[in-house]
Amino acid sequence: MRNAHKHVAHDDTAWKTGMKKLMVYSHDTFGMGNVSRMLVICRHLLKSIPDLSILLVTGSPIIQSLRLPPGLDYIKLPCLTRTDYEAYSVKYLGTEIGETIQLRSDLILSAAVNYKPDLLLVDKKPTGVKDELVATLDYLKSDQPDTNLALVLRDILDSPENTIPVWKMRGYYDTICAFYDLLFVLGVPEVFDPREEYQFPRSVSNKVRFCGYLRHESGTRSRSEIRTELGLAEADKLILVTPGGGQDGFKIIATYIASLPRVQAKHSVKSLIVCGPEMPEAQRQTLHQMIRQNLNISFHEFKNDLVSYLDASDVVVSMGGYNTICELLSLKKRAILVPRAEPAQEQYIRAERMQSFGLFTVIHPHDLAPELLAHELLGELNHTHNRRALSRPDLDGLPRVAEWVSTLLFGSRKPLSSVDSGSTHVSLRRGVTA
Image 1: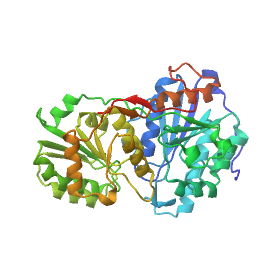
Image 2 (image 1 turned 60 degrees about the vertical axis):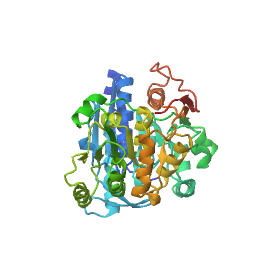
Image 3 (image 1 turned 30 degrees about the vertical axis):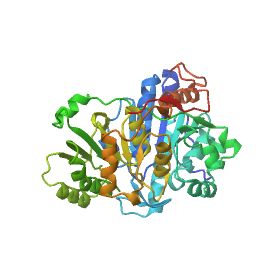
Image 4 (image 1 turned 45 degrees about the vertical axis):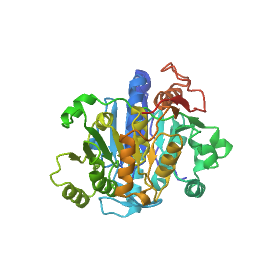
C-alpha cells in the first residue's frame, strides 16, 4: 500500500474537551441505500454517545436532499456510477475514472489528516471504491496509530460465486487482518453467514460481530394523518410502490400500473408511487402518461418521511434492498418484493431467504407481469397469504453497533443499552408478522 502523506502534528483539543471524532466513509455508486443506511447508524450513534462529532465522506448525489442531525457534517466527493459488476465511470464531471478516483482519494486523505478521527467506520469495501481508501489506511496506521477502524457490512454483499473471487483478487481478507479492529455484520447468521458463505479465514472471522438488522423508528406522522392527506376513505386500501432510488425501477412501477384494473375490480384501492430521485426523466414522463389523470394514483419522485407512508399502507410493492427490508420488518408490513437480480444478486438472495421464513412474497424480476403481480396483490389484500407467527430476524442492530463503537472509542463498553453486545452471534427470535 502506498504512503502518500505528510506528517501533521496531533491536535489534542478534542481530547481536552472530551469530544470523540468519528469519520464515516460511505460506499456509493448506485442508488441511495448505502448512504441512507449509514445515516441511520450515525443518527443513533449521536443519540447514544455523548460528545460525539461525525464527519461523513460520501459521493452520494442525494446527500444534500437528506435531513442531517446536529453533530454530523459531510464532505461530498465527485459522483461515480456503476456500469457493470465492479466497473465504474464518472457520473457528472466528464473526467477520466483514474483521475477522479485520485481526486476522491486525496479528499478522503485530507479529511483524515485534518479531522483526526478517533474511529474510522468504513461501509462495505475495505479499501474503498477502486482502492481510494488505501492512502488513508496507510496514513492512519503510520501517523495516527491510535485511530481504530471498523468495517460495516450489510447482511449480504452478493452471491459467494461473485464475492469470493473479488475479495481474494483485491486482497480484502489481508486488508481486514492488517488494518481493521472489528467487522460489524448488520444481519444474523441464520439468514446469511458471511463467515461460511464467503470463506472468511479464521483471522477475519474472529473480528466479526453479528449485530442484527436495523430497526427503523416510526415516521413523524400518524397513519390516520397520512391516510387523510391522501384522501382515503375508511374502506380504501393503500398500496405503496417504491423502487428505492429508482435508477432501475421503471419496470416495477409500469407493471404495477398495468396490474391495477384487475386489483381494483376486487378492492377499492388508492396507490402511492414514489419513483425515486434517480429515475431518468424520460421514464418518469412515460409513467406520468400511463397514469394520466387517474385520481386514485398519487405519484411522487421522493418522500422525505417515507416511513410514515409505509406505515399507513396496507401492502407495499418494492425491491429487496437492505434498508427497505429493515423498514418493512420494523413496521411488520405485508409486502411483495421484486428484487434486483443483476449485476449483483444480493437483493434476490435476501428476498429468497426472507420468503423462506414466511415474511414476504417474492417475484423474480424475469417473471414480473401484470397478471402475476395482480394475483399476489389480491392474495396480500385478502390475507390469503399466511403471515402467521414465524421466526423474525433480530432488529437490535443499532444499539449493538453503538455498543461496539463505544468500545472502540473509549476502550471499554459503555452502558448504552441492555443489549448484550458481547455476543458475536445474534439469533432469530419468535415474533408475529403482519
